[in-house]
Length: 54
Image 1: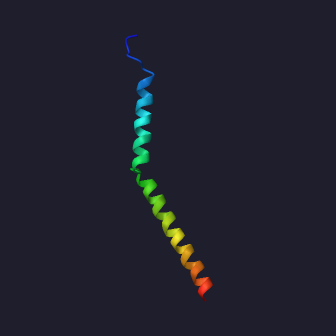
Image 2 (image 1 turned 90 degrees about the vertical axis):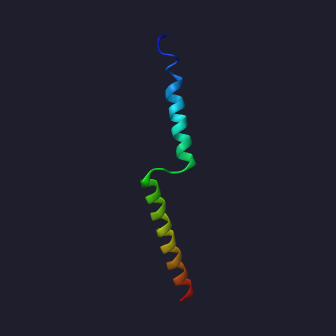
């Protein structure tokens, strides 16, 4: 028992990491994926609107 409760320390680190992930995406890959998804949805919406209006 030299190390004070080694079980709770990784749990606290993982909880802190998951909380930071839910607050705001700090990974540039997540931001790039969201940006690409938005661009794809915009292109799809424009193409559908163009098909229905023509």
